[in-house]
Amino acid sequence: EIVMTQSPATLSVSPGERATLSCRASQSVSSNLAWYQQKPGQAPRLLIYGASTRATGIPARFSGSGSGTEFTLTISSLQSEDFAVYYCQQYNNWPRTFGGGTKVEIK
Amino acid sequence: QLQLQESGPGLVKPSETLSLTCTVSGGSISSSSYYWGWIRQPPGKGLEWIGSIYYSGSTYYNPSLKSRVTISVDTSKNQFSLKLSSVTAADTAVYYCARHRDYAYGWFDPWGQGTLVTVSS
Image 1 (cartoon, rainbow over the protein chains, first blue to last red):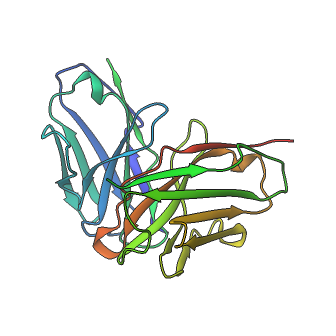
Image 2: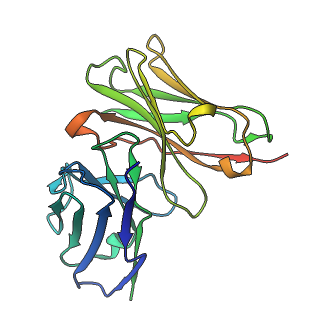
Image 3: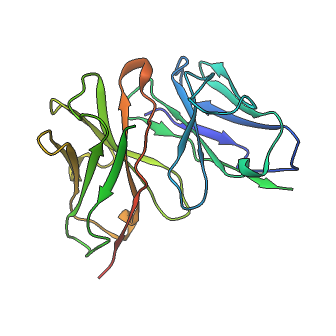
């Protein structure tokens, strides 16, 4: 099983600032990595797939990068609606696995 | 627009079997190349993939749950179902259904809204 490790667990950021979230895989997943955003009481929402491709309707302030074992999600200028929990997920191997999440909170 | 909706009992007794159904609307569950999956999230915790089924019936299960999980599909009703046996309090979670594909297209999208299942006597 591929273990996905996200850091930090919590990120405190002021509105308008940049947020950088990390995701590390225990072995290479190529570019088969997705990012999701989850707000309280809601289902996760797909943000990024293929490590760097934004899903339909996702604002350009969200960007993903990386390949192999190291990945980054960057939110260039945080808006109020971006404060949420973010998860990475690998789909290179079965079983599909998720990271433990990064909570982005208001500083 | 494809939509998924989970349904089933919100309360299950310990040692019994949890049964949930996901109804797909706005598209056919028999579409080739798509898998239909279950993911769960214990209160305040992260996401765990439970298993997935192809429309033809082929299944993949998380090894950590494999001995207790059965996922099936009913193409005539455009539904797929989850059964988790011998449940304990540790199985209390919000259960989501979602669509995905295989190989380099395996992200989950869309998701159902989720349904909370509590295991308690």
